[in-house]
Image 1 (cartoon, helix red, strand yellow):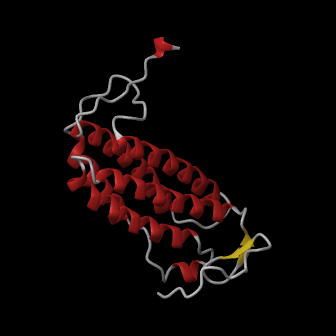
Image 2 (tube, helix red, strand yellow; image 1 turned 180 degrees about the vertical axis):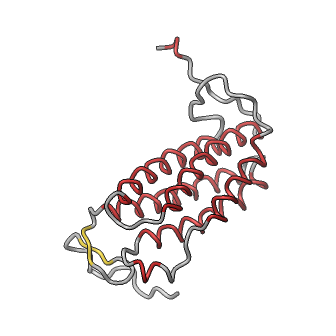
Length: 190
């Protein structure tokens, strides 16, 4: 793939082209969905940077980089309204969801049982994982909304749901590996 020019002026009137050429409003549900998946991918870039200084980095960095590529594929899938065109693109498959589950299980047994809700924090890597989790949840809600009105593969929603679980577990594990205490919700402090 070669991109010669970043600006095209094609979106100056509030519309953009989907993969396949269809023009849609930049405020469409489809754009909200894949735009949030893109935002999640950018947030995972922050996670990767934080993992460079984290004891969890050697294990989690390659996983997060793989997830970033999977999210790029998901974004392309969501950016394609035409089912025939979408079928020719790389897609989220069951194996990607299974991979997330394996990656969750690989670290989850190390974690102490939860006795309260976890507050975001526990070091930079953990905090960025929690930020990514919230962006992922928003993306999931938007894709569910899109799927109520347009053709979206059910695996896209399942992937985002599993990924948000993974981001939560990986955030907890990063805090543990970095020797940071997990901030816990204290209902009595309010």
